[in-house]
Length: 104
Image 1 (cartoon, rainbow, N blue to C red):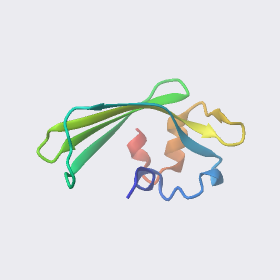
Image 2 (cartoon, helix red, strand yellow):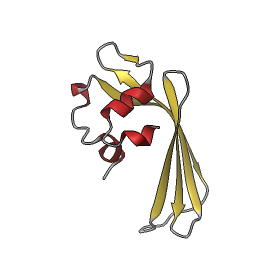
Image 3 (tube, rainbow, N blue to C red):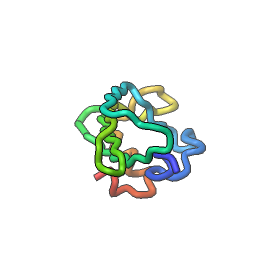
Image 4 (cartoon, rainbow, N blue to C red):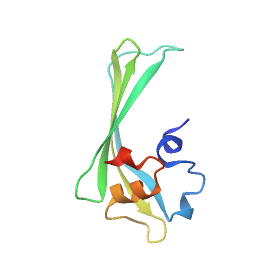
């Protein structure tokens, strides 16, 4: 299951809602090596602001708790008609989400 499937339901046609998520920036820091068949757990946290963008933080840990990587990104929700970021991405994501409590 992928990120959109878990939080936003089947995202086959983002144009049906008139908006789509857009990644504006991403920084990945690698801390440890992963080898074939290593399993990882991934955390995901949203950091909201009063702006049109938000930060997304993910940490990747091996099952023994060793942190192997972290990703910090800046994202937003793009209005597909105006081609501009929507003013309140958290509320737009909540409206589309199958689990809106994840965007509290």
